[in-house]
Length: 317
Image (cartoon, rainbow, N blue to C red):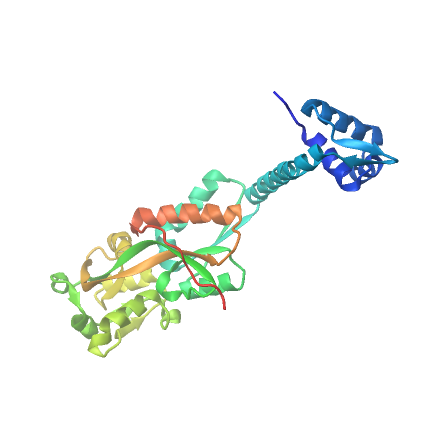
Protein backbone atom coordinates (compact mmCIF):
# COMPACT_ATOMS: atom_id res chain seq x y z
CA UNK A 1 0.00 0.00 0.00
CA UNK A 2 1.42 3.37 -1.04
CA UNK A 3 1.58 5.83 1.86
CA UNK A 4 2.15 9.53 1.28
CA UNK A 5 3.00 11.74 4.26
CA UNK A 6 1.74 15.26 4.76
CA UNK A 7 5.35 16.33 5.31
CA UNK A 8 6.27 15.01 1.87
CA UNK A 9 3.38 16.81 0.19
CA UNK A 10 4.20 20.05 1.99
CA UNK A 11 7.81 19.91 0.78
CA UNK A 12 6.65 18.98 -2.71
CA UNK A 13 4.29 21.97 -3.00
CA UNK A 14 6.87 24.42 -1.65
CA UNK A 15 9.47 23.14 -4.13
CA UNK A 16 6.94 23.28 -6.95
CA UNK A 17 5.99 26.87 -6.10
CA UNK A 18 9.51 28.27 -5.66
CA UNK A 19 11.36 26.13 -8.21
CA UNK A 20 14.21 25.67 -5.77
CA UNK A 21 14.95 23.22 -2.99
CA UNK A 22 16.92 25.89 -1.13
CA UNK A 23 14.15 28.47 -1.35
CA UNK A 24 11.53 25.88 -0.36
CA UNK A 25 13.61 24.97 2.69
CA UNK A 26 13.92 28.64 3.68
CA UNK A 27 10.16 29.22 3.41
CA UNK A 28 9.36 26.09 5.42
CA UNK A 29 12.07 26.70 8.00
CA UNK A 30 13.74 23.37 7.24
CA UNK A 31 17.29 22.43 6.34
CA UNK A 32 17.77 22.01 2.58
CA UNK A 33 18.89 18.35 2.86
CA UNK A 34 15.66 17.58 4.77
CA UNK A 35 13.53 18.93 1.89
CA UNK A 36 15.60 17.01 -0.66
CA UNK A 37 15.17 13.83 1.37
CA UNK A 38 11.37 14.28 1.50
CA UNK A 39 11.18 14.82 -2.27
CA UNK A 40 13.30 11.70 -2.93
CA UNK A 41 11.14 9.67 -0.56
CA UNK A 42 7.99 10.87 -2.33
CA UNK A 43 9.45 10.04 -5.74
CA UNK A 44 10.41 6.59 -4.50
CA UNK A 45 6.96 5.99 -3.05
CA UNK A 46 5.25 7.00 -6.31
CA UNK A 47 7.89 5.46 -8.57
CA UNK A 48 8.22 8.62 -10.66
CA UNK A 49 10.48 11.64 -11.11
CA UNK A 50 8.86 14.86 -9.94
CA UNK A 51 11.58 17.44 -10.62
CA UNK A 52 14.52 17.86 -13.00
CA UNK A 53 17.55 19.87 -11.95
CA UNK A 54 18.20 22.91 -14.13
CA UNK A 55 21.09 25.09 -13.02
CA UNK A 56 20.57 26.00 -9.38
CA UNK A 57 16.86 25.29 -9.48
CA UNK A 58 14.42 22.52 -10.32
CA UNK A 59 11.68 22.22 -12.93
CA UNK A 60 8.53 20.16 -12.29
CA UNK A 61 7.82 17.25 -14.56
CA UNK A 62 4.45 16.51 -16.15
CA UNK A 63 3.80 14.06 -13.32
CA UNK A 64 4.42 16.86 -10.80
CA UNK A 65 1.92 19.05 -12.67
CA UNK A 66 -0.63 16.25 -12.31
CA UNK A 67 0.11 15.71 -8.61
CA UNK A 68 0.00 19.38 -7.58
CA UNK A 69 -3.81 19.94 -7.41
CA UNK A 70 -4.32 16.69 -5.50
CA UNK A 71 -1.61 17.62 -3.01
CA UNK A 72 -3.26 21.01 -2.53
CA UNK A 73 -6.63 19.37 -1.92
CA UNK A 74 -5.15 17.00 0.66
CA UNK A 75 -3.44 19.76 2.62
CA UNK A 76 -6.51 22.01 2.37
CA UNK A 77 -8.69 19.20 3.75
CA UNK A 78 -6.27 18.63 6.61
CA UNK A 79 -6.28 22.34 7.40
CA UNK A 80 -10.10 22.43 7.33
CA UNK A 81 -10.23 19.42 9.65
CA UNK A 82 -7.81 21.10 12.03
CA UNK A 83 -9.89 24.30 12.05
CA UNK A 84 -13.11 22.34 12.65
CA UNK A 85 -11.57 20.53 15.62
CA UNK A 86 -10.22 23.78 17.04
CA UNK A 87 -13.65 25.40 16.65
CA UNK A 88 -15.26 22.58 18.61
CA UNK A 89 -12.50 22.68 21.20
CA UNK A 90 -12.88 26.42 21.66
CA UNK A 91 -16.62 26.29 22.34
CA UNK A 92 -16.30 23.36 24.73
CA UNK A 93 -14.93 25.79 27.32
CA UNK A 94 -16.33 29.02 25.86
CA UNK A 95 -19.76 30.68 25.82
CA UNK A 96 -22.75 29.55 23.75
CA UNK A 97 -25.38 32.25 23.07
CA UNK A 98 -28.75 31.39 21.57
CA UNK A 99 -31.89 33.46 21.16
CA UNK A 100 -35.24 32.15 22.37
CA UNK A 101 -38.43 34.06 23.09
CA UNK A 102 -40.41 33.73 26.31
CA UNK A 103 -42.89 30.95 25.55
CA UNK A 104 -40.25 28.80 23.86
CA UNK A 105 -38.04 29.19 26.93
CA UNK A 106 -40.95 28.08 29.10
CA UNK A 107 -41.14 24.88 27.07
CA UNK A 108 -37.47 24.15 26.53
CA UNK A 109 -35.26 26.54 28.49
CA UNK A 110 -34.06 24.51 31.45
CA UNK A 111 -34.11 21.25 29.51
CA UNK A 112 -32.17 22.80 26.64
CA UNK A 113 -29.45 24.08 28.95
CA UNK A 114 -29.29 20.67 30.64
CA UNK A 115 -28.88 19.04 27.20
CA UNK A 116 -25.95 21.35 26.37
CA UNK A 117 -24.20 20.85 29.69
CA UNK A 118 -24.61 17.08 29.44
CA UNK A 119 -22.49 17.18 26.27
CA UNK A 120 -20.12 20.00 27.22
CA UNK A 121 -19.84 20.38 31.02
CA UNK A 122 -17.27 23.16 30.71
CA UNK A 123 -19.32 25.49 28.53
CA UNK A 124 -21.08 28.68 29.61
CA UNK A 125 -24.64 29.10 28.28
CA UNK A 126 -26.54 32.33 27.58
CA UNK A 127 -30.21 31.97 26.59
CA UNK A 128 -31.14 35.43 25.31
CA UNK A 129 -34.44 37.23 24.78
CA UNK A 130 -37.93 37.96 26.07
CA UNK A 131 -39.90 38.50 22.84
CA UNK A 132 -39.35 37.41 19.23
CA UNK A 133 -39.00 40.97 17.90
CA UNK A 134 -36.27 41.72 20.43
CA UNK A 135 -34.39 38.55 19.55
CA UNK A 136 -34.76 39.20 15.80
CA UNK A 137 -33.14 42.61 16.31
CA UNK A 138 -30.20 40.94 18.07
CA UNK A 139 -29.83 38.62 15.06
CA UNK A 140 -29.78 41.50 12.60
CA UNK A 141 -27.17 43.33 14.65
CA UNK A 142 -24.95 40.24 14.62
CA UNK A 143 -25.10 39.77 18.38
CA UNK A 144 -26.65 36.33 17.94
CA UNK A 145 -25.96 33.66 15.32
CA UNK A 146 -29.30 31.89 15.53
CA UNK A 147 -32.54 31.82 17.48
CA UNK A 148 -35.94 30.20 17.82
CA UNK A 149 -38.73 32.72 17.16
CA UNK A 150 -42.42 33.03 16.43
CA UNK A 151 -42.73 33.23 12.64
CA UNK A 152 -45.42 35.91 12.53
CA UNK A 153 -43.12 38.46 14.20
CA UNK A 154 -40.10 37.99 11.94
CA UNK A 155 -39.44 39.66 8.60
CA UNK A 156 -37.70 37.18 6.32
CA UNK A 157 -35.73 39.90 4.52
CA UNK A 158 -32.09 38.93 4.83
CA UNK A 159 -33.01 36.00 7.04
CA UNK A 160 -33.41 32.26 6.61
CA UNK A 161 -36.55 31.15 8.44
CA UNK A 162 -37.10 27.41 8.96
CA UNK A 163 -40.45 26.52 10.62
CA UNK A 164 -40.00 23.56 12.95
CA UNK A 165 -43.21 23.34 15.03
CA UNK A 166 -46.62 24.90 15.58
CA UNK A 167 -48.60 25.36 18.77
CA UNK A 168 -52.36 25.79 19.08
CA UNK A 169 -53.70 28.81 20.96
CA UNK A 170 -56.42 28.01 23.53
CA UNK A 171 -58.84 30.00 25.69
CA UNK A 172 -58.38 29.57 29.45
CA UNK A 173 -60.89 30.42 32.19
CA UNK A 174 -61.82 29.55 35.76
CA UNK A 175 -65.53 29.63 34.79
CA UNK A 176 -66.62 26.17 33.58
CA UNK A 177 -69.54 27.69 31.65
CA UNK A 178 -67.10 29.54 29.39
CA UNK A 179 -65.36 26.28 28.52
CA UNK A 180 -68.38 24.31 27.32
CA UNK A 181 -67.98 25.27 23.64
CA UNK A 182 -65.08 26.49 21.48
CA UNK A 183 -64.70 30.26 21.68
CA UNK A 184 -65.69 32.11 18.51
CA UNK A 185 -64.42 35.49 17.36
CA UNK A 186 -67.66 37.12 18.58
CA UNK A 187 -67.32 35.62 22.06
CA UNK A 188 -63.64 36.55 22.20
CA UNK A 189 -64.44 40.15 21.29
CA UNK A 190 -66.75 40.37 24.31
CA UNK A 191 -64.44 38.60 26.77
CA UNK A 192 -62.62 40.23 29.66
CA UNK A 193 -59.00 39.30 29.09
CA UNK A 194 -55.60 39.41 30.73
CA UNK A 195 -52.74 39.20 28.21
CA UNK A 196 -49.01 39.00 28.73
CA UNK A 197 -46.17 40.65 26.78
CA UNK A 198 -47.52 44.14 27.48
CA UNK A 199 -44.23 45.82 26.49
CA UNK A 200 -44.45 44.11 23.10
CA UNK A 201 -48.23 44.31 22.72
CA UNK A 202 -48.07 45.81 19.21
CA UNK A 203 -45.89 43.03 17.81
CA UNK A 204 -46.55 40.01 20.03
CA UNK A 205 -47.31 36.87 18.01
CA UNK A 206 -50.33 35.75 20.05
CA UNK A 207 -51.92 39.20 19.94
CA UNK A 208 -51.31 39.43 16.19
CA UNK A 209 -53.12 36.12 15.73
CA UNK A 210 -56.06 37.31 17.86
CA UNK A 211 -56.27 40.58 15.92
CA UNK A 212 -56.55 38.64 12.67
CA UNK A 213 -59.18 36.36 14.19
CA UNK A 214 -61.25 39.36 15.34
CA UNK A 215 -60.82 41.33 12.13
CA UNK A 216 -64.31 40.35 10.89
CA UNK A 217 -65.84 41.72 14.11
CA UNK A 218 -64.19 45.09 13.66
CA UNK A 219 -62.68 44.92 17.14
CA UNK A 220 -59.33 44.24 18.78
CA UNK A 221 -58.85 42.00 21.82
CA UNK A 222 -60.10 43.94 24.87
CA UNK A 223 -57.80 43.61 27.86
CA UNK A 224 -58.80 44.40 31.40
CA UNK A 225 -55.34 43.55 32.69
CA UNK A 226 -51.91 43.80 31.05
CA UNK A 227 -48.88 41.92 32.43
CA UNK A 228 -45.42 41.03 31.22
CA UNK A 229 -45.12 37.33 31.94
CA UNK A 230 -47.49 34.52 31.09
CA UNK A 231 -47.25 33.01 34.58
CA UNK A 232 -48.85 36.10 36.14
CA UNK A 233 -51.59 36.03 33.50
CA UNK A 234 -52.39 32.42 34.36
CA UNK A 235 -52.46 33.16 38.09
CA UNK A 236 -54.94 36.00 37.49
CA UNK A 237 -57.13 33.63 35.48
CA UNK A 238 -57.03 31.23 38.40
CA UNK A 239 -58.26 34.03 40.68
CA UNK A 240 -61.24 34.56 38.38
CA UNK A 241 -60.26 38.15 37.53
CA UNK A 242 -60.06 37.62 33.76
CA UNK A 243 -59.70 34.98 31.06
CA UNK A 244 -56.81 34.67 28.62
CA UNK A 245 -55.56 33.10 25.40
CA UNK A 246 -52.24 31.26 25.60
CA UNK A 247 -50.48 28.42 23.76
CA UNK A 248 -51.81 24.98 24.59
CA UNK A 249 -48.45 23.73 25.82
CA UNK A 250 -48.27 26.61 28.28
CA UNK A 251 -51.79 25.83 29.48
CA UNK A 252 -50.92 22.18 30.05
CA UNK A 253 -47.79 23.14 31.98
CA UNK A 254 -49.00 26.13 33.97
CA UNK A 255 -52.67 25.52 34.81
CA UNK A 256 -52.09 22.54 37.16
CA UNK A 257 -49.47 24.53 39.06
CA UNK A 258 -50.75 28.12 39.01
CA UNK A 259 -54.50 27.83 38.36
CA UNK A 260 -55.69 24.30 39.16
CA UNK A 261 -59.33 25.42 39.15
CA UNK A 262 -59.09 26.70 35.57
CA UNK A 263 -59.32 24.84 32.26
CA UNK A 264 -59.00 25.46 28.55
CA UNK A 265 -61.01 25.16 25.36
CA UNK A 266 -60.17 25.57 21.68
CA UNK A 267 -60.84 28.68 19.63
CA UNK A 268 -63.12 28.47 16.59
CA UNK A 269 -61.66 28.52 14.03
CA UNK A 270 -58.55 26.99 15.58
CA UNK A 271 -55.58 29.34 15.78
CA UNK A 272 -51.85 28.57 15.79
CA UNK A 273 -48.45 30.09 16.54
CA UNK A 274 -45.59 28.76 14.40
CA UNK A 275 -42.05 28.47 15.77
CA UNK A 276 -38.99 28.67 13.52
CA UNK A 277 -35.22 28.58 13.59
CA UNK A 278 -33.92 31.89 12.25
CA UNK A 279 -30.44 33.06 11.22
CA UNK A 280 -28.97 35.52 8.74
CA UNK A 281 -29.14 34.32 5.13
CA UNK A 282 -25.85 32.89 3.88
CA UNK A 283 -24.34 32.74 7.36
CA UNK A 284 -21.82 29.98 8.08
CA UNK A 285 -23.01 28.77 11.46
CA UNK A 286 -20.49 27.85 14.12
CA UNK A 287 -20.53 24.40 15.74
CA UNK A 288 -22.05 26.04 18.82
CA UNK A 289 -24.95 27.51 16.83
CA UNK A 290 -25.54 24.22 15.01
CA UNK A 291 -25.63 22.38 18.34
CA UNK A 292 -28.18 24.79 19.80
CA UNK A 293 -30.37 24.56 16.69
CA UNK A 294 -30.35 20.76 16.88
CA UNK A 295 -31.14 20.59 20.58
CA UNK A 296 -33.70 23.43 20.62
CA UNK A 297 -35.57 21.94 17.66
CA UNK A 298 -35.72 18.55 19.32
CA UNK A 299 -36.99 20.05 22.58
CA UNK A 300 -39.70 22.19 20.99
CA UNK A 301 -40.89 19.34 18.75
CA UNK A 302 -41.30 17.12 21.82
CA UNK A 303 -43.93 19.57 23.09
CA UNK A 304 -45.44 21.32 20.07
CA UNK A 305 -46.62 19.76 16.81
CA UNK A 306 -43.55 19.10 14.62
CA UNK A 307 -43.40 20.58 11.14
CA UNK A 308 -41.23 19.36 8.30
CA UNK A 309 -38.32 21.83 8.08
CA UNK A 310 -38.90 24.24 5.23
CA UNK A 311 -36.44 27.08 4.68
CA UNK A 312 -37.88 30.42 3.64
CA UNK A 313 -35.23 32.94 2.63
CA UNK A 314 -35.36 36.32 0.97
CA UNK A 315 -32.04 37.89 -0.06
CA UNK A 316 -31.34 41.39 1.16
CA UNK A 317 -31.94 43.90 -1.62
